[in-house]
Length: 196
Image (tube, rainbow, N blue to C red; front, side):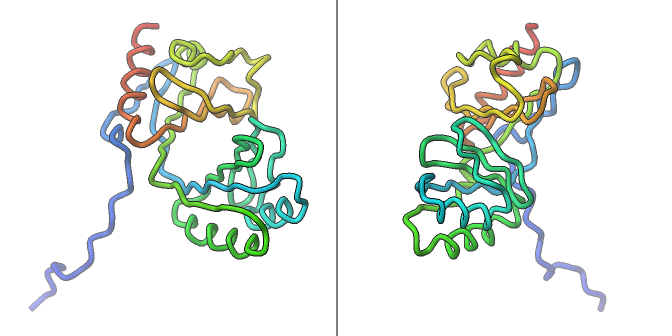
């Protein structure tokens, strides 16, 4: 008798946030949820050259030491969130291995490394009205002379805490938000885009 496949494991679906069922918004300005990536929160002393070097070796990217900047790298994009805090985005299936590598290399040093992949999702807003749409709910000055390529900042959009990142010079922003606020943020942004 032929194998019906009933005993074959069913692959896990790609993870999505509560906004995952929303269709992307297309037009002059587009809104979409990015595929999930691994996320690791890292704490340590930026004044300790051993910490900075070991973390950079593990991440494959230099630790940005200026607050509110990001450094794309080989294995991760690293965001400097505060005086002693960073967030690394990496390939989803590489997060566990990267976390182990960080913990191994930083073991003799004072640090904390925690995987927070399931805590956040990232929405991307791209197009002519991207900054104007974000300005409706975010208090940051998003003019290109102020919020430049490579910058990131923790802020608010409406009632949601966000990490805003501008990866390049084009009008493209990535908005990281807690998983539980993803639908709220999506609906708010989609409504703003509809009104512009």
